[in-house]
Image (tube, rainbow, N blue to C red; front, side, top):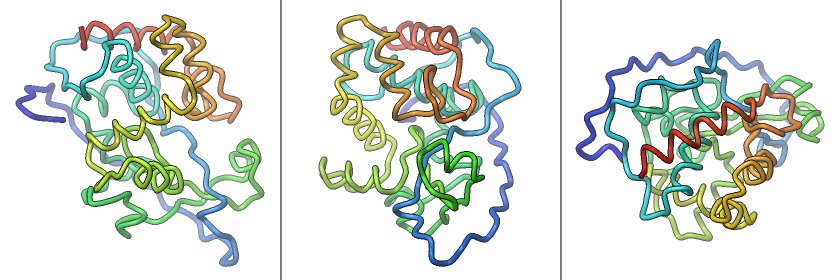
Length: 223
């Protein structure tokens, strides 16, 4: 993902997050949700595109642009997106290094307890947890299912992209993208990614104008 990329030099400042202790009889695996990452104070409509963008996979431009839009919504943009730092970011801003598997599977990081309001918005009984990790904030159960389905051997950037693409295919979102129905695709994807416009998870979703700007930006980057 970073091969030969002369990317903008950006500082990766990990946020410090201290989770509270939860009830011992609650199963993090089944009470797992994926709230949006903490966002920057503002969402710029555009930033100068003066860096070499990495190629996600051999995908149509619009599909690559949609994946870019998701990354730019789920993470602090542009800081953690243009340099691909987002592939190593855990819920709350923690950085993980081991890409042999999802960081909760490897044991590098532990599930993070969430506020009751986020649990309830996700349809879960408090306490609940997030294991959201990587560019697309995969929770552990989702990643495990996709890893097994696709035969992925690690949590590398390329495999994170493949898993995200599979989610888009499973839900018919790729068909909407290729039909040019981008707003409809974004609304449908908001059922998976809480940062997207239309999400009802009460986690500060982006405005549609922001998402469309990032999509258009991705089209230029991957043209």
